[in-house]
Amino acid sequence: MLIVRLLGLVLILNVIRYGGGFLFESYLIFPGLFGAMEESASYFRSEFRTIDWVTSYLYNFVMWLTCVWVFHLIRPAIEGSDLVKSFKAFGIMWLSFASVSAIYMNHYSHPRAFYVWNVLDAVLVFALVAIGNGLLYRRMMGRYANNGV
Image (cartoon, rainbow, N blue to C red; front, side, top):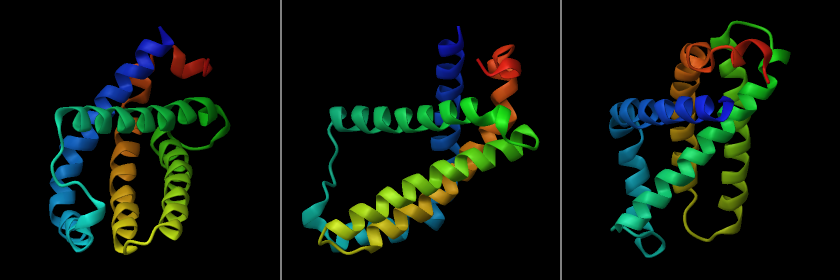
């Protein structure tokens, strides 16, 4: 039942991420991100097939599942409200994401702006998902929120 609850929470957080995220990203992130992609068009595919969309959403689902799982595991050891705990845990996960992005940025020859825009986008969406997680965790996890197991 724990796994079902975690998966349900992650599913809702994905809806929040994409539904809420696109509202902000389209104004704050996408112009710079897509501009960086256009400048390096030979590196990026601009047309996604169905399988590309499916795998992209699957990879993102797994990333958010990892964030929620880490939050679930470390929550008992973090101080603060669930919202504060969520920001702390998701902040650690954002730092990991940003670090891996920087590693890749350093190893490829296309302009670094794409990675910078992705890390900025991650600040926005990690914060949005952290808010959703902090507000929904207890409701979704029920008795599992109390004992952490």
